[in-house]
Image (cartoon, rainbow, N blue to C red; front, side, top):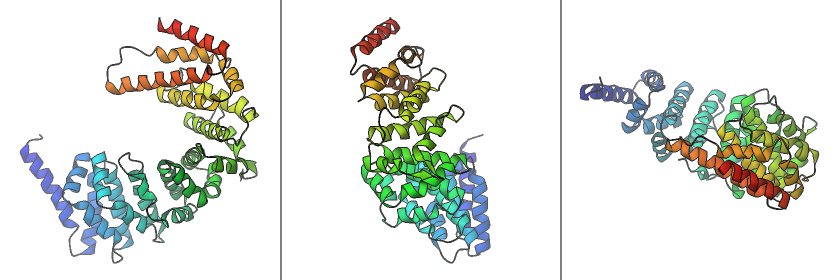
Length: 374
């Protein structure tokens, strides 16, 4: 039953949760926050109701009060993190209530459990497309403090590198992170025992190196546990590694190569990166992986005729691309149409890159395209 009576009962329950946050007894407030935490798990309707009824400003107030117990402050951060995992509207409401500066302030506390709860919530807020990434860079003390927290635990490493990977969008962001020691601080995380940490660290390097000669030239000389960073990336492209890791490592080496830090005839490009990206274009891969593989491969070989020649004879790449146009014409949902369009755009980019300098390759591409268009 979802009639008006049920709605009223539901709102009354939500109101009760919010009212308990104002109880004069701190123990009752703590229990109220814990009960609220259990009520919102997986319940978007309850999350939206609590936000509308004003729970967020009160939770943020309790989180920031030095008189609040550490347990209460931590539980507030956990509930806010849960509210953030709802809809984009939830995130907008949280950002409008100035959740980001409040959580960043919380990171100055020495308690690790509380720090991790704040970081987990910050991560959820920052990876949302509706959050302005610039909010990470407003206060110049934030980035160096986040760097200093990387050594605290695997959780701080995972959340902070994920925040950096998502919030590095411009050359200015790259420079800020570079100047505050991102490379030295994040490189050791590539051999972390935690896959999530390794993966987020790898993503950081791909966004830091993209079209950035300064970062790329520095990365070439970095050693991780006595091994050159480029060799660490090569190991991460091995076939037994998860696809996401192979692809991201290939992007790192592609960006370093395009920035002039690695020669296009280097073995790690010709024998490792290029074949890895060609593998990503095969029809065994998921649609999104094929798009990313094709776009990255196009970018890698765009200026280099020798790489174009090698790619054109590697694993039947040219004929493999024809499959990008054979996706079912029966796709109906808008999202599916968009995905297939994206796939075809990626194939066109790769065709253009393949045939940009060599007449023989261009002919091969045209013949195959004509065949698959018929």
